[in-house]
Image 1 (tube, one colour):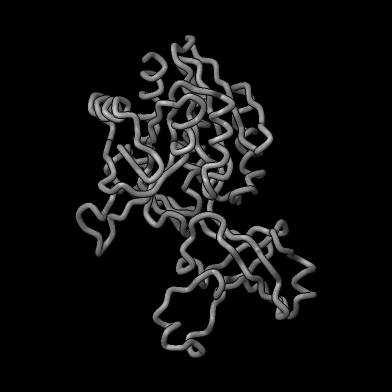
Image 2 (tube, rainbow, N blue to C red; image 1 turned 30 degrees about the horizontal axis):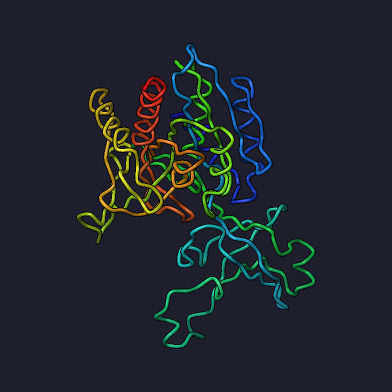
Length: 340
């Protein structure tokens, strides 16, 4: 795993519908290694020639967008009302530093002061209607000089790698998948393959739906990040998957029942190549597979996911060893799937 590439991708802001800077960065890294085009929705559809022609048309996909927030109005006092873009729990937002709008105005997420709360409010989780962004403006007129409804709001977060390979930062979901695909495109592949860097996964798998329709693959690999709950107070199946145990390959989630043969093949390949492999102990979550596998006449699909703690928060946490296992498994599966 190219750690510097991952760091640079994670630090770029690009929530659903605002992926432009992420797309520009990715293009700068792949343009000399493949053919590519951008579709009307903003997906990158790339074609990489391999050493041999593939028997099957295989598509590898990852999404460019991250979760974030959007300004919905400017209040008379200069604070900004917000709505989530993607699945953000408001509890992880309060008190966090943020960047607002194209100019990157610094702000902080505020909420009602504890001493002003009723007993019921103190015992109730905050909602987006009760939190706001404070950029230090003293009035609506002053705030509107810098921001307007529709501007995106991003968490400000550092990207860190510890000595033992622990990675933390925003947007590991799914800049990890984008990193892995860039590295695959930059390498020599045994077979021809399509790669799609897609938009708007976090708001309903929208980009993957159109990309899969365009490519019309026989088989697909989705590279993702998925929730790990190997934390205190979680036990048994509630831990879902764990950091340090390798790539996560699901048999079913809330949007997809995965191809049985590909699921079993992934476990076999992992065992033969000493690649860390685990499955999820709960049927939960979902990813772009949900749109891809029912595209056109149907697409045999597998998702290979990196286990990640604190997903959809300002600071996600993962292990480099798991990310590398995902890359190795994806490369091995791609070679097999091209020949099935």
